[in-house]
Length: 342
Image 1 (tube, one colour):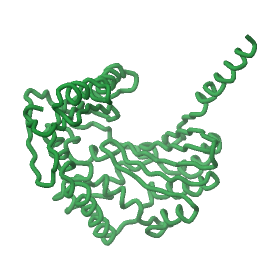
Image 2 (image 1 turned 90 degrees about the vertical axis):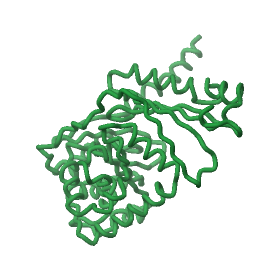
Image 3 (image 1 turned 90 degrees about the horizontal axis):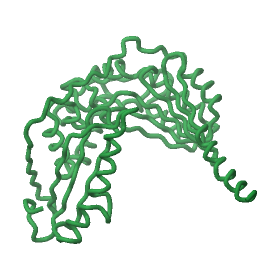
Image 4 (image 1 turned 180 degrees about the horizontal axis):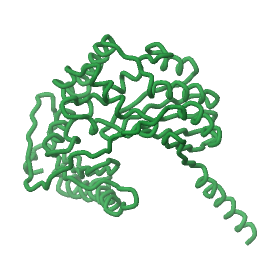
């Protein structure tokens, strides 16, 4: 019995420790800091997430959030263009960034003893970005080429883009993150700087340090490098246009000669996951798994195995958005089965 108790204590102890390995605090200028300790390897990841994404853009400048993400790798008052990434690489690390509807994030993965280095550089470009017209022209060509590769040359991406534009009457989720091409081609220096000045501020950011890091050391470094950056006092509220009642279904047919296997999807507006009120999101997550989440799901069994109507079927739900999300189903019909039958 004593041996069993000892084994139980050994099993429980790591679980208790895990609960204490996430530290959350806010420094004086309003910047939130989260430290996730993992001391298995002498490596850290620093991430800065801004509470601003493509859905926070003003109408007419779609793609500017993603455009600015690219421009942040240009120079500052103390760093030459490209010096940020080359410094990270020279110190054995890697870095990148990504833009979504609801946020923009920048990250570096590097040896733990280089955390101060990347924190200093990330804090520098939060407010000291230096841009000129040459930067705009060069990087605008880059994002247009990115759209060519990821959207224009991908019929599935074009279909999803058109579907989202049809699904949302009023919300900015109907506008692609990368932007509409005709608006991307017109993006200028002032468009990028206006977005930068409006949203890139310590009180609109969350710093996450994960890995071989000590919370008190992270607090000290955050106060040294991010602490002196003044908060933006008139930070705009995220008051986005919301959807009116949707009273009619919409159907869309997209045809492209590059598609070798036709398929159909159905999409519903659905509530997102809200902190403290997660029951509906939990139910929708379970429903997506039951309907089309794997080989034992209802859609797979009924459509693929029983009736042989489909070669593939699935359902998915992602509640990690700020505003209403979607619940989606898809069916790839078997040979000889029409889309209407599917």
